[in-house]
Image 1 (cartoon, rainbow, N blue to C red):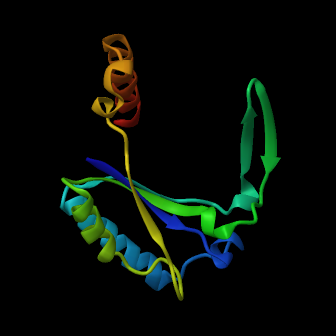
Image 2 (cartoon, rainbow, N blue to C red):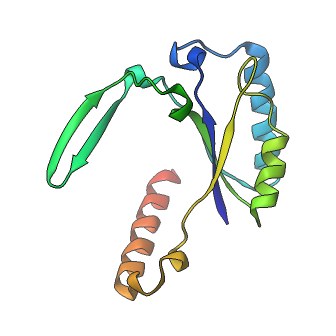
Amino acid sequence: MRFMLMIHATKESEADVMPSEQLLAEMGKYNEELVKAGVLLAAEGLHPSSKGARVHFSGNKRTVIDGPFTETKELIAGFWLIQVKSLEEAIEWVKRCPCPFDGESDIEIRRVFEAEDFGAEFTPELREQEERLRAEVAARTSH
């Protein structure tokens, strides 16, 4: 099972306040543990929403909304993608994480959909396409 672990943004992260050297070192050590355990698939920090945009969909219409976005508690400051056996194991990994920010922080854990989760609507042709695209991406990123 794959899980996305999402660090919720704070007022400081949205103000583009960089983490301390100590926190960067602690996160590096944590990421090393994830790699050594063979569970880490990806990990990245995100720039604040002031440097981003949203695209709103309404039928065929697309509207671009420039950041920043006001609801900090709904924004993501970074993420990990891990592969573990269960939600409980994902929770145990998150509990070992250093606190991402001074004060209080939240890390949300969400399971990533797998092909079998989509049922009959995900036809053999669609599965084949998905596998082909994943193989192409893997080939490009393995260099």
